[in-house]
Length: 398
Image 1 (tube, helix red, strand yellow):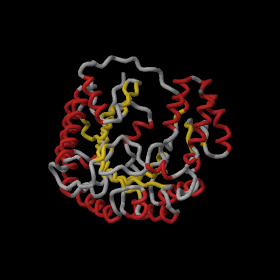
Image 2 (cartoon, one colour; image 1 turned 180 degrees about the horizontal axis):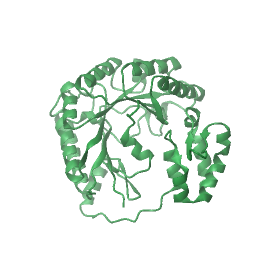
Image 3 (cartoon, helix red, strand yellow; image 1 turned 135 degrees about the vertical axis):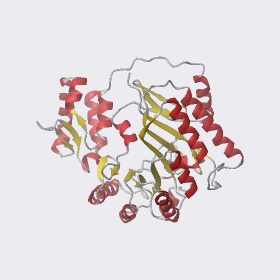
Image 4 (tube, helix red, strand yellow; image 1 turned 180 degrees about the vertical axis):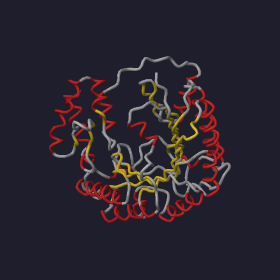
C-alpha cells in the first residue's frame, strides 16, 4: 500500500460567490475586517471556528501513514479568511497526525483585499511558503463582470504585501474567455502579471458551469463571451508571451519559472495518492477516490460518522490506463510508454498509438522515438485541443 505524501484542505468560506464558480463554498459576506486574531465578528466567526474544529477532527480520525507529508495545499473558497491561529491549528494537527517534511511545500490560496501585512507574516511564520493569489484580470470592468470582490488597486496592494513579507514562491491566477474580454485585455493582463515578478502563473479558460450565475446569463460561444476562435488565440498568446519571458509551459494551464512547478498539483497529474480534507474535497488513497459532501451540514454529519465507522483496509483496484493518460498527458513531459507497456501490456499501448496517429500527423502529439520513449502533447496546439485527443482515446479504450 502506497500512502499519500500530499494533503489538500478545503476552506469553503468566501465573501461572495463569483459568477463563474461552482465550487462548494459558504458565503460569509463582504464585511470582513483585516488583521490577525478573530477576523470575522459574530456568527460568521463561530461558523468558521466550528468548521476548523470539524476539519481537524477529520484529520485526526484518518489513519496515520508513517510517512511525512511533502506537500500541503489550502484551497477554497478563500483560505485567507482564516485567522493566523486557525491556520496554525490545522497545520499543527496535520503535523501531529502525519508529520511534515522539513522541505515540504505548503501552499495557500489567497485573494486580494482579504489579508494584510501582519496576517500574511503570521501565515509565513506558521509554515506557508507558497502563495497563490486569485487575480483573474487586471481590468476593473472584467472583475466586476466576474463577480470578484477586489479591484485592480487591491491586486497591486496585495502584491506589495507579499513582497514585503518575503514570500518568493508566488503564483498568480488569470482567467481568459471572460464576458466582454478582448485580446488586448488578455495581453494587458499577461504583461502586467509578468511585470509583478511571479514564479508561477495559472491561466485558466473560462468554463460556463451549470447552475452558476454565468450559466443563466450566457451561452457558450455566444456574445458577450469571446468566440472559440478568440479564446484559442488567447491560449496561443499566453503560451508565446510567457515562454518568451522564461516561463516553462509545464502543464496545460500552468507556467512556471525553472524550479517552481507546483509540487502539490503534480501529485494529481502524476496520478499519485493524496489526502483530501474538508467539505467537497476528494481523496485518493489506496486506489479509492472518496468525495466528501458539498454541503456544510452534510459534511459535519459525515465526519461525525467516521468515529463510528473504522477505516477498512481496502484492496487497491488495478490502475486505469485511460485515467493515467488523461492526467499524464496534461504535463509537458507526457507519459513514459515503457512504464505503460509494463503495466498495461503491449496490445493496449498499440491501440493507444493507433488512435493517436491522426493527431501525430497534425503535430498535436509528439510521438515516441527510439531514444525518447515518451508520448507528449505539443504546446500550444496539442494542449489546446487536448479534449479532442482525449475523446479519441476514450473511444478507442472504452
